[in-house]
Each structure stands twice: as C-alpha cells, then as structure tokens.
Image (cartoon, rainbow, N blue to C red; front, top):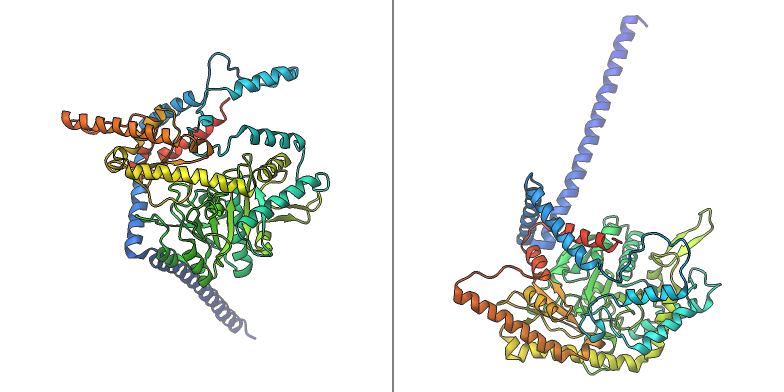
Length: 560
C-alpha cells in the first residue's frame, strides 16, 4: 500500500477513535449530571412531601438565619467579646462544681505507698459528704428513684459478691449469665412480649436507644438495601436518638408535638415516611413533659407501612406497665400493639436498680441479632459482643437482679400508686390552687411521674431559680420554656412542701412584676443560672454559644 494512502487511512482511523472517546466522555458526563439532578430532585420532592411548601420554606429560613448568625458570631471583634463572656461563664461554672476549701484535698498522682484501708475509708466518707443537693430529703427531680437504706444495703451486698465478675466470661461467672438472662425475661414479661421475643441489658437508656436504632438500621440495610437511613421521631423524643443518628449515620426527622395535648402529630409522621425510613419512634412517656404519645396510632401506621416502631419507655420504666394495676388510666403502648417492634426500659430508674442498668427489648430474636457485633477472623480468636461494651460489670447485673427480686410485682404496683399519685396531686394543685393557677399552666396531660409547668405571665426560669434558692433541684426545659419535676419515692413523701414552696416563689415573682409595673420599669434581666442560660439560649438563632458552654461544662467534669 502506498505510504500516502496508508497515512490517510491511519489519520481517519485515529480521528474516529478520538471522536468515539469524546462521545464516551460526553455520555459519562451527561450520566453523572442526570444522576446528580435526579438525586437532588428526589431530595427536594421528599422534602416538599414531608414538610409541605410552608414547612420547607420555614426550614430554609431557619437554616439561612442560623448560618448568617453563625457568621456574625465569628466576625472580628464580635468573636472576641463572645469568647470573653463564654470564658467568664465557664469560670463561674468551674467555681460552682469544683469544690475547694478545708478538708478537700486533690490527688493528682498515685500515692508513693498505698493507703491503709482506714485512710481510704475516711477519704471516701469525706467525698460522700461533700456539699450537694439533698436528694435524701426528696428535693431533687429524678436522679435517685428509691433511695431506701434497706435496698441500698442489699445492692451493696450483691456488688460485693460479684465485684470481679464479667459477663464476657459466662463459663467463669455462670451466676451472672443466669441473672442477666432472668432480668431480660422479667422485663419482657411486664411489657407483654410475645413468644420468641428477646432483649439484652445495657449500661443505660442511651445505650438501649442506640442499640434499637442500630438494629433498625442494619435490618433495613440487609433486608431492603437502604444505604441512606432515616428515622422519624417526636421533637420531644429523647436526645439519645440524635446521638444514634450522629453515631450511625441516620438522618433524623423531627415531628412537632402541638398543643394542647403535646403528642406527636400522626399525619405529619405519615407524610415523612419514604423508602429510606428505617424507624418510627414514640415515647411512653417523653422526658420533657411526661406525655405518652399516641402509640396505638403509631402502631397502626407502622404496620400499614411495614416499618419498625420503637417505644421509648426509659423514663416510664417500671411505672407504665403497672399503671392499670395501681388504679390509673393505662393507654396501650407495649408489645400488645402489633406494630411495636422494640422497647427501651431503664431498670435503674423506677425499677430501682443501681445506676448503669437498662434493657432493650425486641419482638423477635432476629431483631436482636442486628445489634450484635461479631468478628470471626480476628487473630485474638472469634470475638462477639451483644451491645456496645466488651467487658461489663457483673456487679451491676447482680445489683439489678437483687433489686427486681426484692421489690417484686406488688412492690412496683405500690410504688407506682405512690409516685403517680403524688405527681397527680402536684398537677391538680397547679390547676386548682388560686395562688398557682393564675400564672402557671401544666404542659399537656401527664399520665405518669413527670409534671411540667410553664407560664405566660412570669419568667419560668426565674421561678426555677427561686425554687433552687429554697433547695429544690428542677429540670429546666425549652421550646416552650418550662420546668419539670420527675416525682420519685423521696419526692412523693414531700410533694406538699413542693407545692407550698412553689406557691411562695410564684407570689414573690408576681410581686416583683407588680413593683416593675408601678415604677414603670421594664422586665428585669435574668438573675439566676437557669434564667441566664435558657433565657439567652431561647433568643439565639444559632446555638454555637450554648454548644461552647455545654462543652465547657463537660470539660469541667474532668478537671481534677
């Protein structure tokens, strides 16, 4: 073939190859573009479907406002001033939490020689008697739920027998394995679990919730191939669900719980369900207001849409299962509802077990397997753990088992009668006492142990600080501003004093408002810690300052 002809053919062939490559690149570019467009179109559609046009617009406005305010806080000069105030607040916090003075010695290094038993015991006594809010007198919301000397003594003895026990070695500590299995069986029983149900103990309510969310995520991935998981929960749901979303990459959709009943909106939940939804959540009751969501309606929705439903009973624990037996209204919330697939229950709250005990329950053993971690090819051997921890304290399991066996069903019914009865008495007093009802309102219709109070005429956080001055330790709430009392056995014994002190504090705040009106002065600035923190937090569109303060609080906990 002539060289000239050969060169011509080669040139044409090369040109075709270049054109083909160019076409392939263009095709790939178009595919990527359309995939990107499809992805974001789908996200926009789901957003509009779930939130509606008005809700999506509000969400966008809030997001933009938060971002702009965050940029403002980082501006030169502003940032310096903000940081100065944050540092001052943290310093004040440290002064309050880190006690010093006569009799308090800091131990920052190991002693050269070990102390005698007597020296250790003396120091422990000093630590136990450090200045603190007197939970023993019933002045603390939640925290210590039983506190009886006899039960504490029994728990301490159980601790002593199993101090070195670790359930990771069931052959070495068979008694711990037996007690743990029996704890799960007993708790499954009081929540009316069906045959084949299963569960595990955990270190607390947060871990129980984490495990339930992990199980739902893994179930959706294995059975439906979901790679962008989402869960839907009430905006009053425990913040541990947000932690689960953060840890496990689950998008959290919050649903409003509107007045007057403050239960989660079922139609709003339904609109948010899509192919990525792995879990619905309801509370029985919720932590802020003590409201039980409409679990029956959530169950019907879960069954119809074939989505797992988790009921958070961490706070209700051993109260809600015994409401009916104790003589109170008891809405359905447990495994008797077909849609309920998992429940979290804290045995260390109204089960009266030592702190560090909780349970997560599943309708089937298969659901429980999704929370397991198993490593079959580790050089250290086959490794398997049922929950987040590896080694776990057998002493805590023993303390829990001893508590459940000591109190028994009759004891829990009696406790529910006393605790819920006291909570109802507090709520009735706020509604009917003229010294309280004119300025305070109960949030929703609480059915268990928590009573939340708000006010439209007085600063509720000033009231919280006034109660603090009288020795009471209440929980401050936000969205809406409120405070709550979680009634425990110690609180139930002094609920009348709580009402009397609350009436005095409200009257004092009312008098201050009258004086301001007479003198023509504006409402006074926040005085106490609660009013200062939550008053400021509620007015900030961007919570970065509050996040810094909370981080400073956590740092303070580890400051020796």
